[in-house]
Image 1 (tube, rainbow, N blue to C red):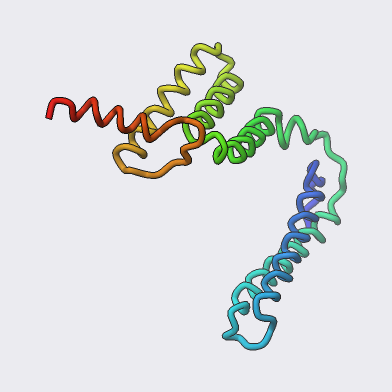
Image 2: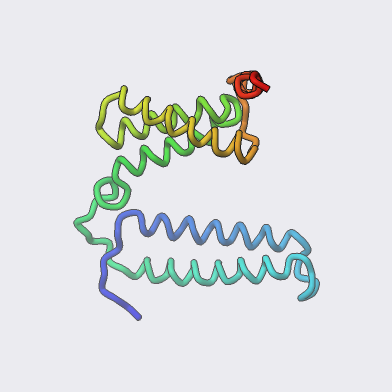
Length: 170
């Protein structure tokens, strides 16, 4: 089915990247065990990635046939600044989580995004960030005992102090 919709900004680059990544994954799947038998360890990954290459190739061919004329702008209509800032914040969060730990990284992440996206003041943003992270920490770390990256905050001492508060009367 050929439609006369114009090609949107970024659509061609995305489809080329998708096709190239699919080819790389097919190569990686082939390197597992080659194509020695249908029951070989790499057979299912190769079949899956072969389907990815075929569908990505068909999509790329269809995208190349579309006219590139459009009034849309990539930065305005496809990926506006709040989306770019959020993606950058998530990447930064992932990079800082291990060295800084869960508590400071999460407070910084939430503070920055709440301040940027809500257009409220820094006091509002820090209060909401601190309360949110404290609730998440209490629920997941203390109640469900989920381990979180400790980082620079002396988490063990904090937990011992909290437990001491509640067990002092016993």
